[in-house]
Length: 402
Image (cartoon, rainbow, N blue to C red; front, side, top):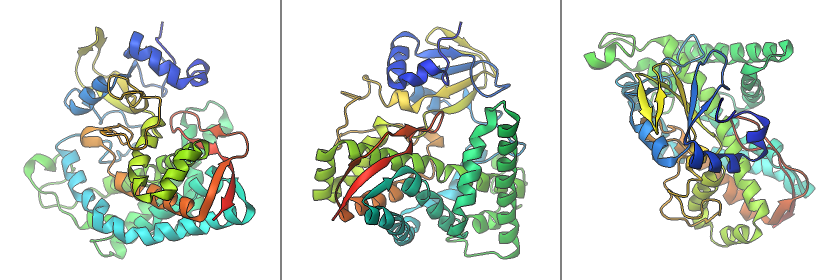
């Protein structure tokens, strides 16, 4: 018998309570649910076990579990290949690049907030949190921000992967193909028309050359050769989804929290310097990406459970972030919590490389919301996205403009 079914009705009726129970009773929980063909699946629920697994990249690997014909590095890669991709991409998420994107992020934020202010409220999830991150992401990729609707629609339909209904499967297939076609098109365009490698990640990847014999095999090229263009398209495919979907949830989570906590809202409005720390705590409380997978590379035992090579493991960041062994009063929001070593962006070598961009968007969004309003609160029923991206789908709010 499985210990739980992560996508079952019982788990979703009270996800936080379910994780509390599992951390106490079955910290390495077995389930039969998951992606079709995934085999045996385990869930790590305790903070210390999640961190240990994320550190142990020899036992819990990221290659071998992709659902795509082409992998999406650096996520779907392991050392030493992972090190090469990560080293190439990190500068594009550095402080200088983030600073250059702030004005665009603020401009998009103001444009989306304006109609909500004019109407005294609206759907903060659908009309604000949904369009903001893809516009910023496309700007980061030096693509037209106006393409955000197509990107967002494809990414939402890509979550239909496990659907059994023929029409939903057709939507998934079309979305998946659309995202891959765009990824390859961007790579082909940059190959024909290279841009400044200092600010265009795709041009930078195309211009890079494999360094070191150890990394040559993993990068699918000999030392001194260009990186495999199919894998560069895989990087773009990863960015086109991961670069905005979880941030959409994060923005909605932050606005939902503040709409329910007027005292904290006023505190941040009075002192905007507290916003960055507050963002970290809101993401700890309600983590946008609930879990991420690993594949067991060789037989191992954790808390008495025998995990076999090829088994799938889900590292439950959201559960670890509510572990009382790691956080005092984990269910209570403390916007100035210190320390706050949460797992909302993952942990270890695969910690989200786009975290600086997400933090930028969240900070700018909250700064503008708080600056342009006297108060805001809930005006209707909030609905939440299902597995595995967690956050408001609809967030009706009233707004009192400043």
